[in-house]
Length: 86
Image 1 (cartoon, rainbow, N blue to C red):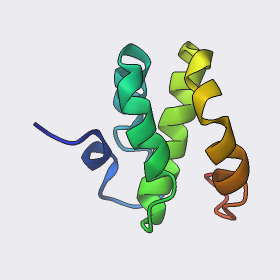
Image 2: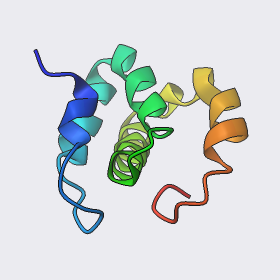
Image 3: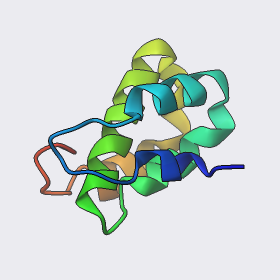
Image 4: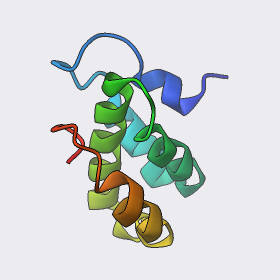
């Protein structure tokens, strides 16, 4: 079985890759949301960008996904300088 974050790997920042697919998965299965949220802190800028995109799309479908993670979003993710994440 493929790790959901593995779907965000590869290519460069000009492509959103499979972030739409990941967004749909985490909207259907909120347990996966934490994995993708953690990926926003990854060392790879492509993974960070795509994870942020997937989170934005999934939370548009199901906003309550964000609430349990408010602290990490405000304290760690909000200070990431990468344009695509902000």
